[in-house]
Length: 51
Figure (cartoon, rainbow, N blue to C red):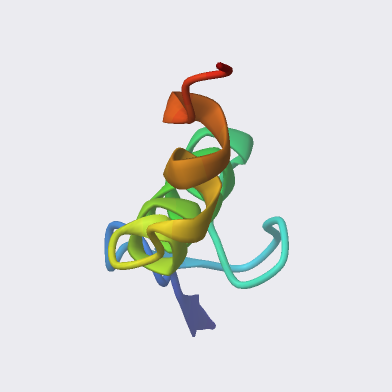
């Protein structure tokens, strides 16, 4: 038995360390949010004003 990384539920068959597709998607989104949280380079390119 394995414990889900996202919700902590114990499962036998799942998706990449998660018990379901929903938990897997939530886990990926959380990791993306954490990765870009302190990264300002992507917002500088978007907010740059063209003269």
